[in-house]
Length: 53
Image 1 (tube, rainbow, N blue to C red):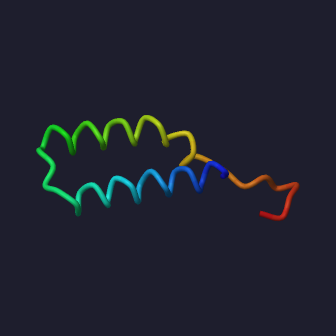
Image 2 (cartoon, helix red, strand yellow):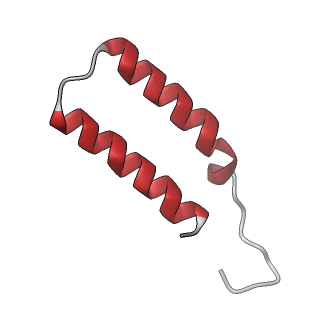
Image 3 (cartoon, helix red, strand yellow):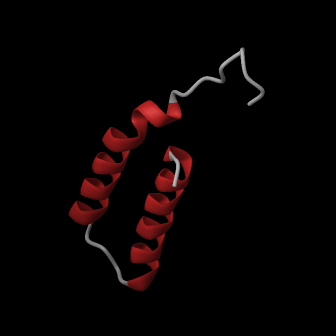
C-alpha cells in the first residue's frame, strides 16, 4: 500500500468513525490534529518532472 492509499484509508476510517457514532468535540479536534500532522508532508508532494506522474 503506497502513501496515498494509506492516507486515503486513514481519512475513510475517520469518516466511518464519525458516521458510526457521535464523537465529542475533543475527539474530532484530536483526530484532525493527528491527521494533519501525519499527512502534511504527503500533501506537499510535487510530481517528479523526470517521470510520467
